[in-house]
Image 1 (cartoon, rainbow, N blue to C red):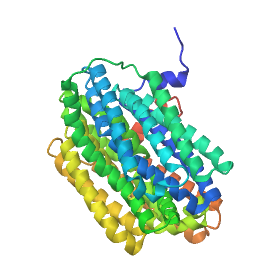
Image 2: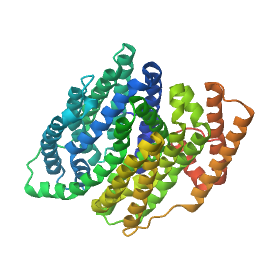
Image 3: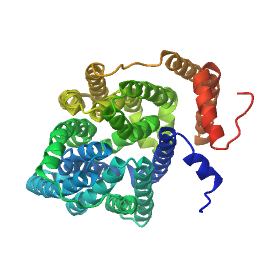
Image 4: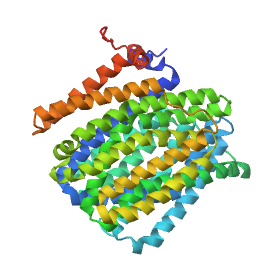
Amino acid sequence: MVLQPRPISRLMGMDPVRRQSLISLASTVGLTAAGFVATMYFTHVLGKAAYGPYALFLAYYGIFNLIGDGGFGGAAVKRISEESEQNEYFTAFLVLRVLLLALSVTALLAIRPFIDDLQGEGTLFWLVLALVIGVFTGVTGNGVYGEGKVGVNQSGGLLNSLVKILLQVVAVFFGYGAAGLIGGFVAGLFVGGLFTLRFLTLRPARFTGRHLRNLSTFSFWIFLASSGVIIFSHADTILVGYFMTDADVSVYQIAFQFTTAAAFTTTALRTTLYPKISRWHADRNPTWIANALSRAFTYSLLLAVPVAVGGWVLGERLLYFFYGAGFAEGAAALGILLLVQVVNVFMYLQTMTLNAIDRPRESFYATGTAAAVNVALDLALIPLIGIEGAAIATLVTMLVNAAIARHYLSKQISVRLERGPTLHILIAAGLMALVLLSYRAVIPLSNVFVVLAAVALGAIVYGLVLLKADRGIRDELRDLVVQLGVPWPRWL
């Protein structure tokens, strides 16, 4: 008998959804924290102009990787998670993914002469290599995800990011610039795929046309919905690069990356709940789905709201000290993008639920409409007001997407906010804002340590007010902490 360390045994003894959400959240926090620190180093060493080509590479990778996936990744997770003919669906997905890789690479090579951004730093070679490795990583990752091994999938993503960051730091240190950033990205992608492969238990099996049809029926709408997400995720970056400079791309991307701290919980819960909701839908338990979604809203807002409020008060100083004086000019865009992350809570979780309950068509209607709005607004606003226009376009896009997704989802399940906890979150964030504004009025934010002290003060005020105001959230957090073997203060 193998004895597990006590913390691990306590973790494994948790409710599966709570355990996987905790692992997913820890993975997301670790991944993003490491990324933040590394990006600070890159921006200080390389400056604004050199980071822009890497941001554009990521945008092009996202678009052509979508073509290579064709929506079959989400379809495979859905079908595999239903626990019927898993090996057959996995094999069909693998074959389709390889065929679509050829299509995406062909499309990339066909438009190469029209994309100036791919001409330098050997970018085209790296982009093709990334797409090939992306097939390997996507197949293994979606396989374990469909099997319900959310922790393994998240750990693979964490390892991917850590290897990427480590190699990027080394490459930048030795003077490789944007090429080093791109090479580190590709290497991390490969290592993450190797990790998830180790835990993949699905095996090749003979599949039929029925398996292809079942995947295709679902993937068609997933692909269209994903296309919408990719468009409003990357169109702003590409169009900022088209109308403006690489330096402007860098400032916009740094501001956007900074706001992702608000999405920790949303990302973790989305990853955890998708296979669970898919299973509950197959078992016809709509009440479980509605309750889980409502609770997910609460715990996502638990972080998104205070991060947004704190960012509105301290954002300009944080950009200045963390990334350099040149990036402080992104403060206005940052303020808008922080609000985007609050709206993202509803968009992200609602579209995820639509896909999980076998309603990808409605998910596409929401994201497709939003994508069209996004491109139109980007074309109209970026030439007029620059990166702030891109941020406004993204905010409007998120609002449109969230509203349409809620319209369709409410026809299937009850979509509701937990009013009490949401009100308590807003009150705690409001009091935090008053404290931070008072702090800023009394103490000049003249160095990074004073700014970090303000961040810590805001977090303490928000946490204490919320725990005192909301007994339900306090009790759930206390149970979680105690279950992990960590003492809970009696005065709370």
